[in-house]
Amino acid sequence: MGRSAAVIGYSYPVPHNKMEAFFVSAVAVAVGEIGDKTQLLALLLAARYKKPVPIIVGILFATLANHALAGLLGQWVASHISTELLRWALGLSFLGIAVWTLKPDDLGDEKLNEGRYGIFLLTCVTFFLAEIGDKTQLATVALAAKYSNLPLVIGGTTLGMLIADVPAVLLGKIAAPNFPFKTVRWIAAGIFALLGIAVLAGLNRHFL
Image (cartoon, rainbow, N blue to C red; front, side):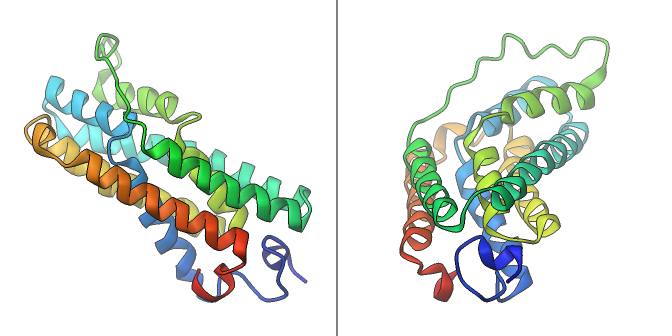
């Protein structure tokens, strides 16, 4: 039995389709990022500097670095925790993220100073730090523990961040007042809750 099978306690490869890890990771993080403090950071940076290209590239590099570390932690967890304990830890983690998603974030802009290093590096540093311990980073840890294909998980979670944050950068604060953050947060919470229930109930054998 390979490690991928041991992650959720079944004797078959996980996932059935390799791209499943990519798509599940992308969707979970994209919806979880809506209204998150890193998306608010993207709005603030775009509104202040009005230079979308270095901000978007900075988000890409910061997310890849942060989620790579999170993914490595998730794989370490998967290989050092018993199958049953890991299943409960993953399921409860997804449920906890679902609850966390309902809490709106707030982020001040008093520390967003371009300084001498430029907008790209400012974005890289602030995004990397803002993502530490954030729900999308913890979701990446959980997804990497669940799936055995680390590159696809990291690629999916990074794409999910870009799906949520690039429009925020391009639109700045223009669309923010009218965006249905509350509705999307409930949708995101529902997705994470379903992931948690599926893992705890073993339904991921058929649906995930």
